[in-house]
Every structure is written in C-alpha cells, then in structure tokens.
Image: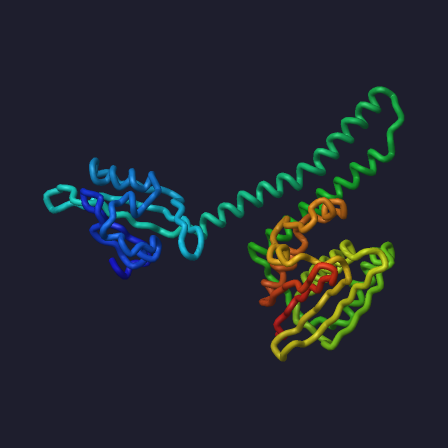
Length: 332
C-alpha cells in the first residue's frame, strides 16, 4: 500500500487514522496526521460524510472533483471510500483512495471556456446580421429605399463568421491528425511570394517591409508554413501604426534548427500577456482586435502548426519596443 501512487487514508471507528501512505502525507503535509481526528485532517465536509457512511452504514461512496490546496497549487481528486471489515463482517474502519483528476478537471474547464468563447464570438456577428436583415425586410415591406450600408454590414459580418468557422475547422484538423507534407522549401522565393500576397495590406498603412535570409532552405509543409507567415505578418500589420516598419528574417541558430523572425516597431506587448498570447481567443486588447476583424485563433493555429513540425514559437517584446515572433523549425 505504501508503494501505491494514489494517496490513501484509512481511519478506525473513532475517526482516528489507522494508516496513510507517503502520497497522502505529501498531499496534506501535516506531521501530526496520526494524532488528529478525521475532520481535522480533511476539511471537505462531503468526504468526511463519506467516511461516516462507510463506518456507520457500511456504504461505499465516490466523490468527484474534491479540491485540495497543496504546495504545488490546487489539485482535484476523485475520492472512493469503502468500509474495512473483519472476517466476521464487523466494520472496524474505512479506507479512502484519492485518485488525482487534476488534468481531467483542467481539460474539462478548457472545454467549457472554449464553448463559451466560441458562442460569444459567433453571437456578435450573428446579432448584427439579424438586426440589419430585419431592418432591410422592414424597409422592403414598407416600400422604402434599401440602405446600401446595411448590405455592406451584413457582408462584413458574414465574412467574419466564415473566417471564424474556417479557423475552428483548421484548429480541429491540427489537433486531431495534423498530417504534414514536408518538403524542402526555398526560403527566399517562398517569403517573397507571401510578402507580395500581403503587399496591398502593407501599402494601406504605408508600412516599410524588409526581408533577409541567412538560410536558403527550410524543411516544412508549404501550406502550413504559409499559414504561419501570413498570420504573423498580418498581425504585425494590424498592430503596427501607420508608417511603421516590419521585417522578416531567416536565420540558423544551430545546425539542428532554423528560425524565422517577424519583427515590428509597434506598441509592444506587456510581459503579463505574453504567456497567454497563443491561447485560443486570448486578446491583449479585445475591442481593438475585434475591430480589426481577427478571429482570436491565429496565434493558436501558429502554435499548433509549429508543434506539429516538432518546433516551437515564442514572442520577445516590451511596451514601446515593438515585438518579435520567433518560429523555430528542426533543420530536418
């Protein structure tokens, strides 16, 4: 029992600990466990009741997601409590097994948050579309002239919805299989094509875009690499003020890796936001991001693409000093 990976606590009919293993001692971190009553060791009322039901009625109980505050943070456990009986059937104690379900609890919370975020992101453009459509229908029924601006608003929000759904499907594909078709890609030709594709976007804000490559080839999936560069360059364009500078640079940091660095001289990103930038729907400036038409999934897609390549992505930034997004690819 001492070697079992789950924390264990057995108590006698007087609620005094009979036995506990080292895992439980770490969980509770109380040197006086053996001298205390059950309710002094475990503060969760439902768990204490489960022990009492086992001791007095011989019932087995399972309690889901019991929260414990440990030295490493909050943890959640599935607690199964059963009576301990002698050979004649008489109950002499109760045993609780604490199974760690922290990862499952966090995954469940992520799912709940994701559904809530998706619902919110879908509702905003749908509300606009519904409102403008009702107004147009009313205008038609009353014989009034149709306002062109309403049609443009419907088209704009429809495009936003389509982009969001496409990004969600793309993210789902990356998470489920994410099969890559890796080939050798010539960095200069490939990057020039992407920059030309975004040229009109840069020109609208009078951005100066520079390009440099110390590396001639990268081993990657062309379609996914295009997504990475377009997402990062598009973000740099959105958040860099008019007349700003953006650069794209390929470098070899070691024989085992190739990096592409996309830099801008925009406002920069505060340190407290940098750790969450690649989460789905996380935005530093929510109002500004929605105004620019972003779905909130671009950086999450970049992160998953880089992980599928066996690489990584991170940001280096400080307020007032611009931002640099670095994607590191294995050399082969």
